[in-house]
Image (cartoon, rainbow, N blue to C red; front, side):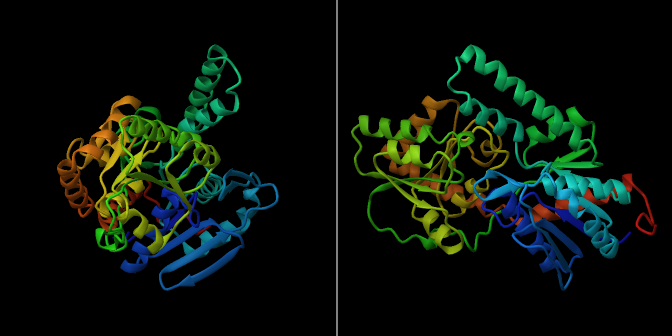
Length: 397
């Protein structure tokens, strides 16, 4: 086997605006820079198959049975209708390993094809679907009393997690974005599991792109504006700032989702820009002073790195992956609870010297997080998968 295995990468998300999509695009770009044989499989509005250098792109369209799980993302329960075409493409590309990013419609198709063609399977965990599902259900049945609602949402979360563990057990090697999830996967699946963190483009995200010159403190949020992101905590932050007598501040909310209208009605000093990309997003980050990320469910938090690369310190919760990206009291704050989250935001409004030091520390940390280092480690995991599954001609039949 060569040192550069042929990889078929089945991504949950590619064209959308989220962390998985960003990682998937960066992975394809890494393979292109390195001249690595790489088959990129994902959903798109129109089916497409093309080859450009060492990169082969296989895009599958979702049909009329697809239903929305985000405003820009759907799940097609009939995605398996593409299995014959998918098998033909894989036989032509002859991958050494198949890597999928989760139990999406594309991921299920990838797992089926890997099993059918006996291709070593690697799976990476990117999204805490069990927590997302439980929080969305909790909002849906909020009319119930807590005594009825809480057992239902807890049972739902437990059931989804068990189902996900069974799905990931099909892979030989697993990857996850933080150590807590790596440990969880080892415990629940018995499979070898490794870190697959994420990087940041420090050429795109930079303090040099700051355009603001006024003294107003701007507190920002970037991401999906949905229940699992806990965005309603931002209103508590604003209320505390006003009660403390602060007036010279604004919130900058970047993104979209089901909680957008609620935030527009309840945040008094906020600007909503919708979804931004590329240079517009980079300039928006650079114009922030503090990044607020109240989510308890994120497995990593690309937005934390993007803010840090822009010289913006973050305040995050102590749950999930973002806490691993912030050195508490140095490059930002990790808040133990909602009260502390609010208090940390207040403290940065008051102490300009601490804020300045945190800006420098956040930027220094971001400069250590390159995408190339992330994906080099992923290729190391592929080598292990091939050692565990030594097959010389699994696609010859």
